[in-house]
Image (cartoon, rainbow, N blue to C red):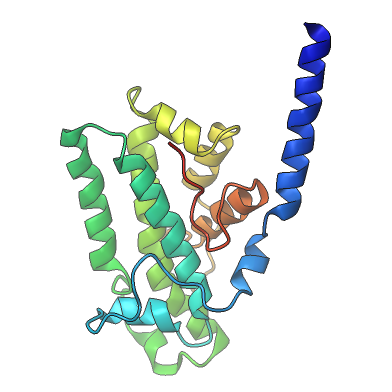
Length: 210
């Protein structure tokens, strides 16, 4: 029996190593062309924020926004699929707020005057990152601290859910030029770790869990 378990353990280690070799890093993901977000960019009527996500903002290419959108959307779907009907409303409202705030939460429009500059482009892009980051945290906090739903988070981010929870809830030191009272780019740290752990598809979406 012990010999059999050792063989299984070796097989598991080899499987993980091979999977890791096939995984794309976040940097490699961002260099891909034609990454599509979770919605159809070819629809005749798109909101202003959807057009920005499909086309990019200033010097920030569309791949940055598509990867964040795919990651968040897949997380939202994985969560809402497994929670009670009455609690689905809470998760849906968090996501609806994100959609309303996306691209519109900057306290002023000073970055819009010259988005061709690298700094202004980066700061303007945070107007999109921040709502996704905020919604990711709110959904995570709701399910992780609820005994009924904590297992959903644990399955998504197995085998290190506690590490992912701490990373998602982590508040990094701010860039003094940031328009927010919180770091809008923590979501990239989460995506980067998930990519290294081979939890993502090449477009940034979480691999499906049943």
